[in-house]
Amino acid sequence: MTYPISSDENGINIKPELMEKEKLYHFVFKDKVLLLFKDSQDFLNCYEIEEEELVHQVKNSKTDEEVEKIFEKYIQRDDPKIK
Image 1 (cartoon, rainbow, N blue to C red):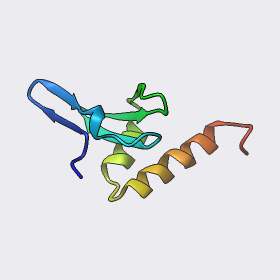
Image 2 (cartoon, rainbow, N blue to C red; image 1 turned 90 degrees about the horizontal axis):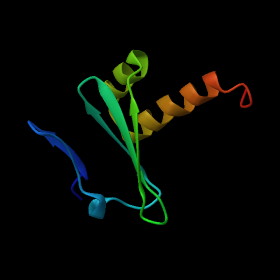
Image 3 (cartoon, helix red, strand yellow; image 1 turned 180 degrees about the horizontal axis):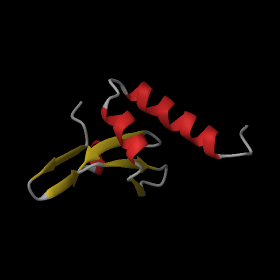
C-alpha cells in the first residue's frame, strides 16, 4: 500500500483516502515530525512536533514500531500520572 503522506517542493501532500482509521502515521518534514490520525468519524487530526530530541529519534528510527515506542517513552516521562 502507498504511504498516504509525501512531500514535494510545494509542501506536504496528504491522501486521507489511503489512511486506515485509528492508525497513527508519521512524517518528517523540515526538522519537524507530523503525526496524522484519521479517527472513526473520518476526521483527520494532525500534530506537529518540533522538539529536537524527538525529531532526531524519529528520523533515526527504522520501523513504525520504533516510532511508537519513542512516543510512549516520551509520554511516560512527561506525564506524572503514568509514573
